[in-house]
Length: 157
Image (cartoon, rainbow, N blue to C red):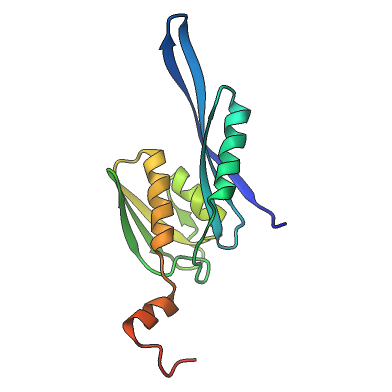
């Protein structure tokens, strides 16, 4: 079994008004990754914080995706829009580190990236930022895939 890292990115309390007063629930967002190209995002709701985090972790493990890592960074620039959030992700030179907001950083670190530049434009809502990051990582293509699509892989080893 591979070793997974977990980041609890967001825990918030929500309330519902009932005849007897407010009824509180906990919302938890968890990122799980192996640091070698696999990452997942999960959301859990429960009456208590540990239960919500546990549920989110279980869902994140179920929804793990494979991502492409080229020399500790992303293979190419990408701009993704999710609702009112636009996210720009760019490769960075070695030693730069991960320049990102907390939710975006959690996903990139869990996936195994070491040097990435990001910029959130528009809404900086953490939930939308996490979804935009996952969408961007799914849309990433390896250099070989790009060359194959352009028809330039003939003659290369």
